[in-house]
Every structure is written in structure tokens, then in C-alpha cells.
Length: 256
Image (cartoon, rainbow, N blue to C red; front, side, top):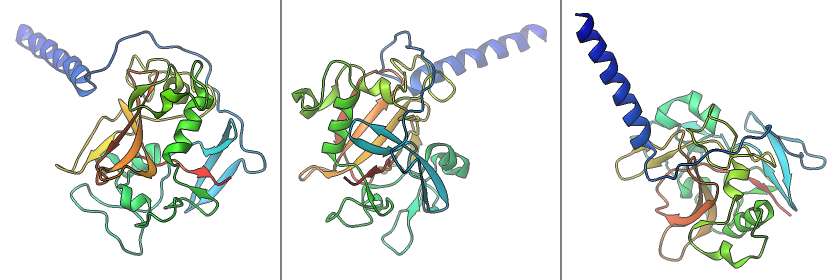
């Protein structure tokens, strides 16, 4: 009996390890950079923003002013429901748990975050703020990266780009991210969290602890909208486009 129990325990442990490996597949292995957590410098005159019953910290990075947390506003719907164009902001919470919205922020389709209008980039952000454009993201990347400054042509390419801009944006350690959490320093306090994704095809959530998908307000002609991806297995940052019905996180940036 003891031998049988021991075999069951060993089998369960092996299954758990395999799950961790396969659930965040296709990433690199490396030793993470570990530094003291730095929450950055608040934007001058507006250290916090109160919006929709939530309080958001601000951070100054280069000439930009960002919210330090992902946006979390709206009424949560279960994953099998569709976010609709009505008078109510709606969102998904990872695994349909409100606690995950409180932890990671809400998850929004592109139409929902844009408030069903592509004539302005404010979307569901508060007045004076907007959903970052693709150009806003490239400026941030250049301001953060140690090798590739703003206006470097690398930021106009698609795929994994740069040297360490992604690591600069991620919260450090393994409390939130799976290891190895490559290059994570959170040097300017962007404090990215691995909120995952909701796929529209099968209406399921995936990639919690592995990745943070962040929308831009910029559509790609005839092919969805641009987004950024931060990964536990990368210090660089991915620029790509996807179906606007997928649900990602949203950050707000202050108008100039």
C-alpha cells in the first residue's frame, strides 16, 4: 500500500512539472536578472488617477506618462458570453474570477476597449488619457531599451525586437511570473503582470503566469489590430497583430 501511494505521489509530481513546461511552451531558458523592485517616478502633479471606482498609479518614462496598472473597469461577463456594443463597459476576468481582474486588470476585445469607435483612441480610458497607439508603444520601447533608442528602425519590424525593453517592463521574481522570467528588472516601474489571453475561437483562457498581451489602438489594414507581448521567456518584446475578437489587457497613456 505504501509503495502504491508513493508511486501515485511521484506520478502526480511528474504530471505537475510537465504541465508547467507545456503550458508556457516555445520559450527560451536563461537565468533571470534580479534587482530591487523600483516603482518608478510618478507623473508630475498626477501621482494617481481615480477612475471607475479604481485608483491607478502613474509612472513617467521618457516623455510619456503611463498608468502603472492594467485598466480594470466594467461589468464582468463569463467567457462563453460576447462583449456587446451597449451603454455598459464589459470585460472578461481570467478564468471568470473577479479576483483575477483585481490582480491583472480586465480583458477586453479591441472593439470594446475602443468603445466601438475607431475615430478616437480614448476608448475606455478616462478623459485626458487614451489607449496607446502602435507609435506610442514604439516610443516606450526605445525609451527603455539599453541598445536600441527611440526611432531605431528595429521598432518598425514585426516579431521579437530589441534587447531588453520587455524585461524592463516586467515585475521581477517569480511571485507573479513563471521562471525563468528572463531579463525582468521593472527598472522604470511599468510593473507588467502575466495576465494571459482569452481566445475568441473556443472562448478559453490561456497563458496566465506566462505572458502579458497588451492592445494598441492602431488597426492593421485588413488584418486585425497591433499589440505587444511580454513573455516569461524573453527580455525583448514582440510586436504583432491579431484578430480583434481576442481579449487582451489594456494600459492607458496620458494625452500630450
